[in-house]
Image (tube, rainbow, N blue to C red):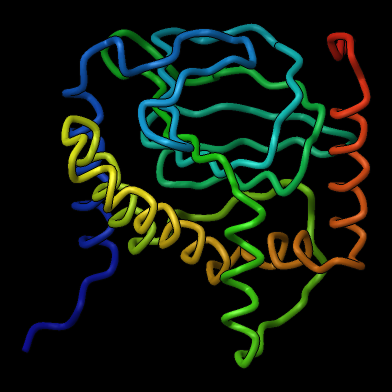
Length: 223
């Protein structure tokens, strides 16, 4: 039996997903820099830029952004991250950042699949996983790692439901739950497990941000 080639398997899966995304009509993508990004499926947005952008201020919400092609730089506090194709960026709670697209062209646009994180789903999964032990390393509010093959596979199956409304009604919630599970057990899952501990620092920040959002009636401006 031939040895399992993780690198080849990952490359094939990423290329397969990239081809599927590239074949979608332009209406499936967001080209905007604002906060109101349309969803192609529940909890999923597709971002596309065909050129580099200037530095822009954003308020990131809890998401995972799977970069399929191109690259971007993000600055928050004293940290600067460069995230590119084959990597997944995880944001554990609302976070003001400055970011820009650094690799994009008409021939090779920046492409990312952005999945909104549902804390209710994460907590439910974590409760079910209670008998398993996980390392609780020091965590960050934002971090990235190489995208897991199983996460790519789940995302591929989720995208396949875009033009299948009957199947999406039944299968989409199940696959979206699997995506959350894959994130919890991934190498950067510690930051999400911190987020759903009721007494953790990350959890307290998340609750404070929720209260600000609920009680703040005007638009939040980021200088």
